[in-house]
Length: 185
Image 1 (tube, helix red, strand yellow):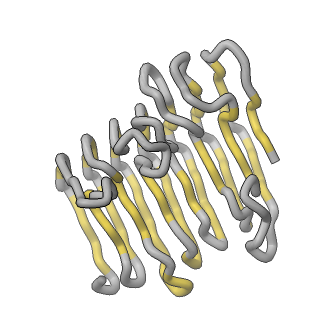
Image 2: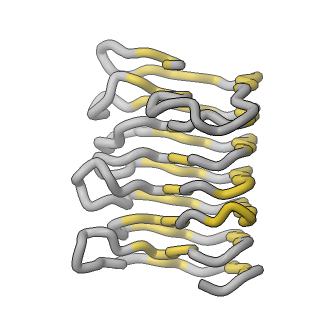
């Protein structure tokens, strides 16, 4: 629940909770920076609560095989905050959940590798409430065992964020599933 937190060069694994919602990092305070971490094998990778003033930056970090298997826990789950930035990171093989889910007012998803590979992840990128979103220079790949036919979803739970504009630029999107949607708006 602290503010202005920086986490660097840490490996997180094995977080479990009584409600199957154990997170490696559960951010409730304002402003979090995560750099050069490896977050894997938890019920949630990162879970950020609602904080309208918070800015979260994740860079050069790997997320793998997080999720309880219920579809409600994810590698990265950012709730209602001011700004979320994910750059130069690798999120893959979530267990039935999303690789990246963000409800932030502004999203900067820049130069990442978001790949389902051999896992059972649902969406590779979910921006369920819209928001001003820049998705630039990413490799986004849906694996053959995904549980959802959509690769990227924008506003699927209702566009409730003001200034809901999506800039989807210079991304490589690959579908290894037998059917699907590249972007569902």
